Amino acid sequence: MHTVVVGTSGVTASDVLAVARGGARIELSAQAVAALAAAREIVDALAAKPDPVYGVSTGFGALATRHISQELRAQLQRNIVRSHAAGMGPRVEREVVRALMFLRLKTVCSGHTGVRPEVAQTMADVLNAGITPVVHEYGSLGCSGDLAPLSHCALTLMGEGEAEGPDGRVRPAGELLAEHGIQPVELREKEGLALLNGTDGMLGMLIMALADLDTLYKSADVTAALSLEALLGTDKVLAPELHAIRPHPGQGASAANMLAVLKGSGLTGHHQDDAPRVQDAYSVRCAPQVAGAGRDTLAHARLVAERELASAVDNPVVLPDGRVESNGNFHGAPVAYVLDFLAIAAADLGSIAERRTDRLLDKNRSHGLPPFLADDAGVDSGLMIAQYTQAALVSELKRLAVPASADSIPSSAMQEDHVSMGWSAARKLRTAVDNLTRIIAIELYAATRAVELREGLTPAPATRAVIEAVRAAGVQGPGPDRFLAPDLAAADAFVRGGHLVSAVETVTGPLA
Figure 1: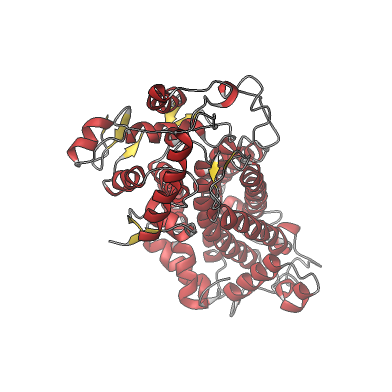
Figure 2: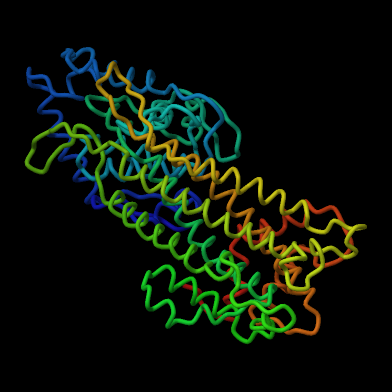
């Protein structure tokens, strides 16, 4: 099994995906263990002094003015975990919780948090055992970190609350730890706070969304090319020299992808034959510009994620010179903004895909295709309601594009008086990515059927590869009306699994 070694300098997005989705094992480097021990010595020295230090010998948030005596500090750390584990609503997905815990471990291992090595090792042990704390949908405001979600994870480390075992059953966390020979941790000064105070949930969801969207943007280039081909459009608008004079990198990449898919097509360029067109519609002609803008948004979001992966987010932090200082690095704004930005881009990509689908189904605009791509229009409805489903998904994408990060509700008696709502931005982006996958799948379903209905014209080799692969995956071609939901589900699985991109790349080579 793949192993990820956690050091002091952060982790990569690939590491996060390997742990969250691939079940990779985790090891702590010797450097990380040494850094943990050194930072802990600083915290222990401060704890022994009479002067109050936030997070070490004081209360938290608006209660930070109280100096806590030594005999109450272990109770203080337990209490912050128990009281902050206040989430509600449905359970969060296993991959999100694993990313959340792993990213918290990454920061703990930086040597800036003051957590003991044995606490970090227990975090790794829990992940390696396949134990997943029960984390709920609601509870994080994305400031002072993802407090409630991280608290539910910390509760499991203490042997309290509920968690899911490797068999998928939810049971008391203490039982699961005991079965795997893991000793619950007894938290000491600062450790409870250090386990809660990070942007790890929103960052984990950002990293997974970036991976999914990378595939979806390539998939959208493919379906846009198939729709252009089915509509007998022109590929001249994809010429590199046209995109060089407006040098947005994403636009150039999308145009190049579409051109590669369409190479050798016998369908493109027929728009002057029976119904002369000066230009194709915007949804066809401007596909690289819209998808390209989304690609550039992905690049910006990836830069933010890389910076956050290299960060040690905690409050207070242990600095190399031995100081323990309060800060505001836990604020989720940098991550929240790009999560919202990606949701906007996803909504627009879904919107333009739906417009192409609608054009394929409308006999007045499809340039010779049967109404709704039906076998016997009137007796058959064809893909009429598939487009309704796509439109409903697009409408929801537009609602999900409303930014969460523009909101703020003060908390902690006005001590935390401006929050990021980054967790909410991440949760709605996950739904947006899910829906965008379905939207692209419906365009794929319509476009492949439309190409097959262009009898006497030869599609591009890449298009033929897609049609063969999607039919082999259980998505049926043209014919009389049938129960449509299974076909759409199969198309969704085909796109979701990356098989659309793989099918094209067997002909084109790697897409950009």
